[in-house]
Length: 231
Image 1 (cartoon, rainbow, N blue to C red):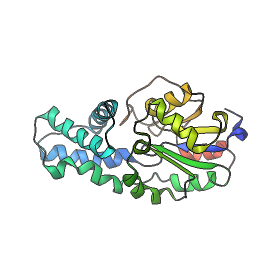
Image 2: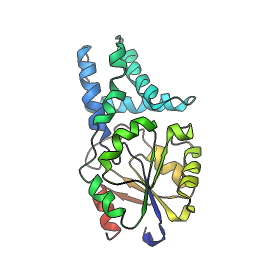
Image 3: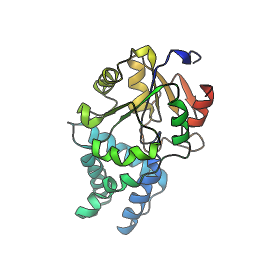
């Protein structure tokens, strides 16, 4: 990808791309499983999280709070233990504490000098309000699963996003960590994509399900993207 000048808007996935959700997930699920007598590796926890989240998002639309509760209940069902009401809500309550990657705020600040910035996220509006201050910039656009009534990779999500950003496809660049949820559907609609391969130095796909799709550009972090854009 060389023609960066054509872009007017850069949209981002949030959790996994801008926010270090895997650390946040593990800080909650690891001790939950341990309290009930189960030890699992980080890789096992994240892989099962990805499967359970996808299952919860693939049926009729439900809030992301309910998706996260379903994930917790799914782990309990897998391992045959009972969860309390407090435990059932542990993931959704922890989301406000999930921190941005170290390069997020600085990179977004530089990108905001040239582009309109947006976030396309599988999240509830009220949950995102706890994350927004960590990004360090005022977003021009926000599209959430709650607003769309569907979760990525639904094409409905990206069609609505194009309406919100009010820019032609060729002027939009979508940046994300998840090949399945973001890169694949964006490419099917003709939107240019960047894969932020946050796990380039680790095995596995972590908290997202695998996909064989290829992005237009792969970078290990946002700072590398900023450098490629000559900012």
